[in-house]
Amino acid sequence: MYQHNRRLGSAAHPTVTVAIDEQHGRTHARVELYWGTKQLAGSGVAYRHPADHWPGEDRQELATARALSDLADQVAALCRAKN
Image (cartoon, rainbow, N blue to C red; front, side):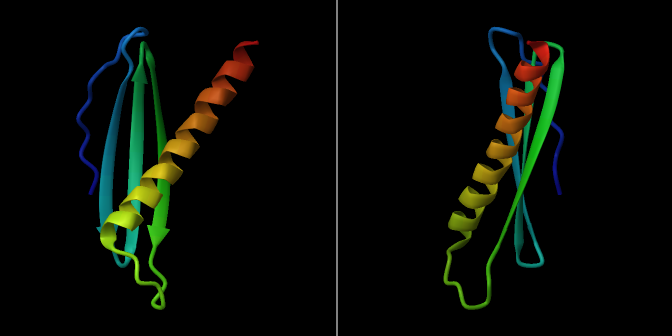
């Protein structure tokens, strides 16, 4: 499953970690952002339909893209809340 490798990022140098796990035909990605005192996490899932012929790497890329999109939405919401 996911391993937590906590690294605190500074405001000038945020840190992002990505963990990918495959279970039961589904690829799960989790991205964590450490930015100053904030920690946010995004998640994404991709799965292969039996008729699809996607290599495992494509599912990993899609799940990671979805997790990053989730994280981006959270960062945008934080920015909107500050204003």
